[in-house]
Amino acid sequence: MPEGHTIHRLARDYAERFQGTAPRVTSPQGKFSDAAALLDRAGLTATEAHGKHLFLRFRDSDWVHIHLGLFGKAGFGPAPAPPPTDTVRLRLANDTAYADLRGPTTCALITGTEKQAIHARLGPDPLREDADPATAYRRISRSRTTIAALLMDQKIVAGVGNVYRAEVLFRHGIDPYRTGREITRAEWDAVWGDLVELMREGVRRNRIDTVRAEHTPEAMGRPPRVDDHGGEVYVYRRAGRPCHVCGDEVRTAGLAARNLFWCPTCQAR
Image 1 (cartoon, helix red, strand yellow):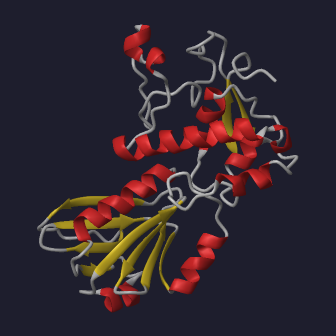
Image 2 (cartoon, helix red, strand yellow):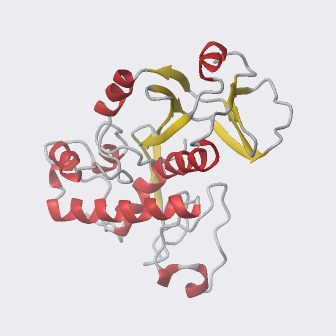
């Protein structure tokens, strides 16, 4: 599932191509046809992301809520748009560009009130200006749940997925099995600040890179990582391989319905 930086990047991409224009709005697949007809040729006035949720505003108060889920993808191209396939849930097209949305878990026309209800159930997002890390820490500091599971709970922190979870815990030497109540406020503030910087870089580069300068392939004389997710990482999907820092074997285990990765030496209890 795409992590939060991808959704914020999509919000920016939609805004760059369509904000201030009145695009054609269609649903070649047919599952969004009624809403598309209501939005066709309406002005796109804003885009917004919160965690893994994307919002496109038409007119003053008509919002399209998109959640990509595991299989959703959005693709962009220059005008003229090619004939759409019947897998396209939502197409936006204007004189300069088009965007096709395929396979999302959610693509729905909602009201402003419904949009606020979605925000209300989400935790603070490190990429939003209105995020309050203290809100997340209040919940973390009272919890007996592992910090690894808490970071994946979108009600506590919105936008963090499996990669950022594993990597930020490694970067701060935190055992993923420590409970939330064992995390100090200083540790949380450091983790939050790091998430802000890492995820901003993820938006800029459109991929996740988490290794510090001294651990890049060039600095260490090692081959670059080859993985569908791209980017240089410390532990994510590196189970059984030596840690870039200490050389110990990176471990993996199931936690919060996802595979967790960590270094038992660098992240000792």
